[in-house]
Image (cartoon, rainbow, N blue to C red):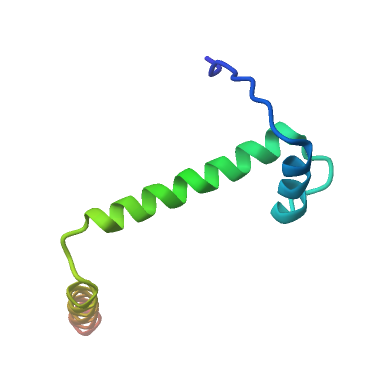
Length: 83
């Protein structure tokens, strides 16, 4: 099922700037270029919203990542020496 379409009016200069800045492949329609930019914007917003909601500080996140890396290496070494 296709999503319903929405019609918007944008300034022609803004759309041209979008094409210039986005560096989309030649032949990309205005609608495709706008969808690409909006999709990236929404993805970035979701990422930043997720980061903002995180209860971990950067130091805590780094500490956990290092601990997990060390644990993975211990498991791999134990498996390699058991074989």
